[in-house]
Length: 117
Image 1 (tube, helix red, strand yellow):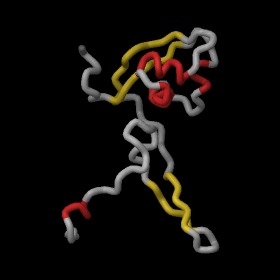
Image 2 (spheres, helix red, strand yellow):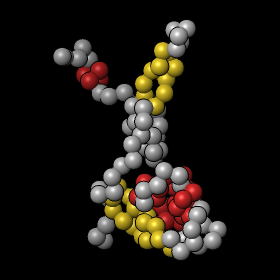
Image 3 (cartoon, one colour):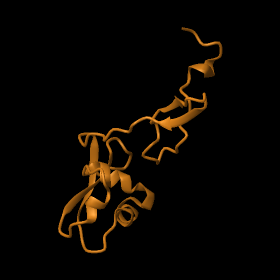
Image 4 (cartoon, helix red, strand yellow):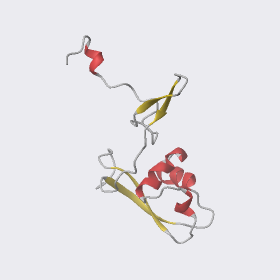
């Protein structure tokens, strides 16, 4: 199949920024019985931990929260989901519920400036 215009071959942009855990998750449409079309995100599967680059290991203390740990290690509280994916847990509260638990802080492999520096 050939595109009429070169830009027609590009994938649709994500409605979420690259820093979002939902970036790149496809949007689908549900057609309601009355004909309305309701957009929704397809399921985001937990990624494997094989391709992650560990940055640190953290021992949980009382009062720790995933967003505070993300700010401390990643510089952005809204990146808590990267820590959840690295450990892997479905409920991020599990990460810090047990003082003494050791959790991994990681980024996707191939991130510039991370790794064997």
